Every structure is written in C-alpha cells, then in structure tokens.
Image (cartoon, rainbow over all chains, first blue to last red; front, top):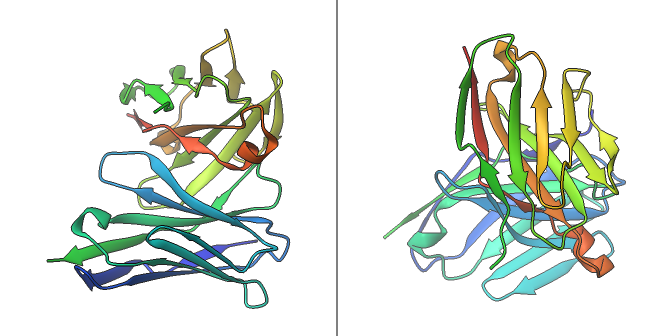
Amino acid sequence: GEDVEQSLFLSVREGDSSVINCTYTDSSSTYLYWYKQEPGAGLQLLTYIFSNMDMKQDQRLTVLLNKKDKHLSLRIADTQTGDSAIYFCAESINNNDMRFGAGTRLTVKP
Amino acid sequence: EPEVTQTPSHQVTQMGQEVILRCVPISNHLYFYWYRQILGQKVEFLVSFYNNEISEKSEIFDDQFSVERPDGSNFTLKIRSTKLEDSAMYFCASSGGREALYRYEQYFGPGTRLTVT
C-alpha cells in the first residue's frame, strides 16, 4: 500500500540547522504536511505545502518538495532546545484522510 | 488561540465494554476527524465527518465504531465492544472555517489514551 517513510532520529547542536526528510509513495498526493509533537501533547500543525509548489518558507521553517522523487524535507534554521520534539510528515490526496510517517525524534543538544 | 479539546485524557475499560471518547472541535470548523496511534506505531486515519455524515472512513473503522455530533459543539467516537487491540491514543482533529483555504489545516486535540484490559 501507499506509505510515508521518515528516519527515526536526528540529533543536532543548538544553533545549527536541522533537516528532517520524508519520502512518500503515492504520486497522487496533493497536500503534504509537517506536524510537531511534544511530550504529552497532541499534534501541532507546523506547515503544509501543495504539490504544485516546490518550496515554502515560514520564519525559521523551510519546506522543500521534490515531486519527481516524492521527497519532502523540513529545514529548521537556528535550531533551539525548544525545537526538541517528534516531527511527523503526512500526506493526503483529498485532505480527508492523512497518511503519517512514523515520526522523527529531533534532539537538540546545548 | 482556539484549540481542539478532548476528554477524558485517559480512559481505562474492560474488554467488551462500550466507550465514548469526546471531542470539542474548534468552534467555526466544519470538518471533523478521528485518528488513532497504537503505541509504537504510526498515526492512522479512522474517519472524517462533514455536514452530519461520514465523508470517508478507513478499513479500521468497522461496525464497532460510530461517530456522532450530538449537539453544536461535541464530536464523539463510540466503540461498542472494546477489544484489547483497541488500546491506543485517539486523536480528534478539525478543519475548515468559512474560507475554503482553511479546509487544508487539520488541528489536533491532545488525545485520549484508551487502555483496554
């Protein structure tokens, strides 16, 4: 079936940039999302991109989409300790059901 | 800032019992969803709901599950006869204000952890 894959762990130093990668298999995916989950909390929508875009920037966050390779990335500039969390990539064709990756646990070291 | 709320935060029930998980979506949203995450596994879509009816459901959402919007604010997920494998974190989400663009932004609640013993 269709799937979304992410690496499970990423560790960076405070102040560095973090790049979290995601691949998906469904070429019909129209909407691609990044969610953040802090311990004990729900999923916080960070940003999303439509498949007809290749980049979206929102303050410290940059999303890059390579539709040909079905590759999505989230870059966090000047990563802070407060950015430590699990980051989920998700995709949807019709924005009814979303398919999530397993999440990447980002650890930011001081 | 408006947010999705869910109650209870943790529900423990015995196998075979019925449970109702409650959600209060963001007040001007029109689309409602339930997802679940079994411990150590991915977040999985269960069902979406719009205009007082189910718009889409996954294979997981079988006859044991039902959803309801009993009034203008609550959105509930009922599991009729719980099984051990129903133990999971259940997330409610909502999207879609009056402007179509906001249809694409699903906002999640903090989740209800369901433990079936």
